[in-house]
Length: 385
Image (cartoon, rainbow, N blue to C red; front, side, top):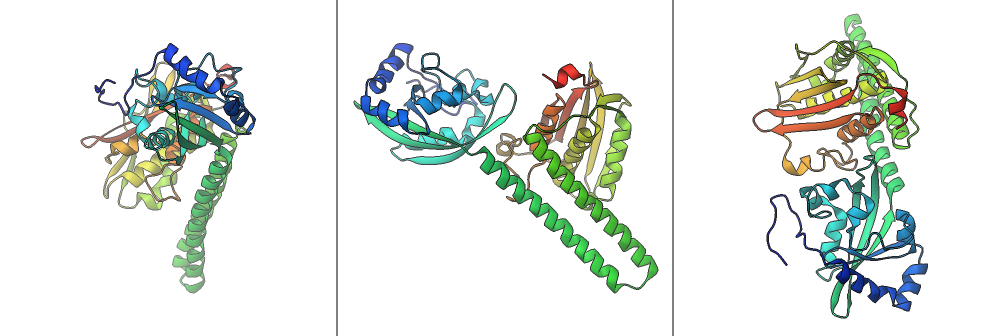
């Protein structure tokens, strides 16, 4: 095996030839015991060789992938079979990109190759529509005729993951907000001064509005994940949207000791899109930037046209480390505590509804810029694609 690695390569890229893989596959296809055992168990089983190439799939695996038999995919790797977005980032395919460093499936297989059974959760983003699969992967070593193989068992845990994660974050945010509201009402009952009471009432109104926003945001995200959200096209002005969001966050606790402003170069453009989604996405961008910005730092938001698209961007002076960059759009990943972290994931999810894209650049010298780009006119034919 070659010892040469590319700079971003995680695992070596060597594969067996088609003939060698077919020979290995016959070891299992000719085994009546294997066919009977794995063929009838109501689970998804895939067997790979030491180079992580698929040589056997049971009935459950074929049904999961919509295949009639193994012929067309023999020798490919699991991420290539399932359509993982990272499987085409390097010429070596599945398991060879830098992003694969954090892949639960790849790491489970590696552990099994050290004669240790392993289980790991894996979030796999699909390249065709950027939807995602949440999988639990078991990997167990197997030796036949002195050749090393790994039996992979796959379970879909998408609903389990989604419900647990969304509920945890939702209740965390709701409890935090209601605690602040309770404290404000307590202060209101204790103070007799008219001016102080007036200020506390204003504060209570803001907190109540925030509570409503969090509930609506949760409902929107659940609808988006379940593909139940119905787009409403309306005409909005780009500067008006930015002004509106700036006013909302001007009184937010995150803005204390920080400056939030609109870039003077921002373009005034009429957009035909879903205003609710745009506001939610840009709000998440600003919130994340404020959380990342240093004390006394400035967060700048702006917009410009690129052909028939509009690009919104948010800049702050914070830097995102490389290990976080590789996972930043995953639903279950957060740079905060385990009860936080839907911001960047929801940006990407909601942007996909608007047929948009999300990306970012980051450096220690220039900070971080998140960009979202959408069609200026979201037509029906784009929505239905």
